Length: 172
Image 1 (cartoon, rainbow, N blue to C red):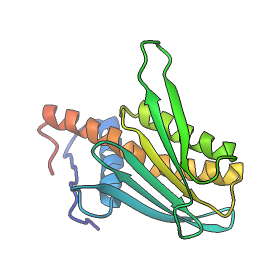
Image 2 (tube, rainbow, N blue to C red):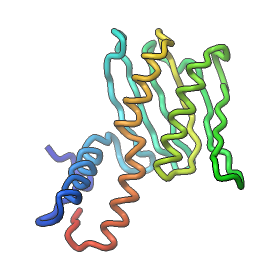
Image 3 (tube, one colour):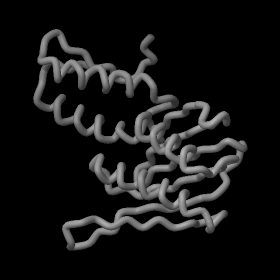
């Protein structure tokens, strides 16, 4: 079922191109809400026996991820890539509000900002974690769900822009 989002198609092409089209179409059809002003994706999954709601938003100047098992925002973290001259990037994650004694939450923020950075974006991340369970397995589940469901959207969108500029086979 198509929801009115941009949908790419190709009458012919390589297997790799068709795989990229399938990935893009799956992502484009999953995005809920209007494409402007904020792109967002919502999902609900069970992590270690707890129902977990995740909302991922891409604003013009930052990403916002809310993962909650308690129905509220919980601990809020800010993560960003520090722009330095050195070849190895460094990432800073700080607690804005909430529990400051949870090193696994800091690790979760760092993994997500690294993924954002490797996807080609320099936007910072605001991460809100309202969790019943702060275990490593829960936080790994959140990182996996977020990276699989939306943060790659930015990279796929950039890829689509490049491909559409060079290929008359793409249609929206």
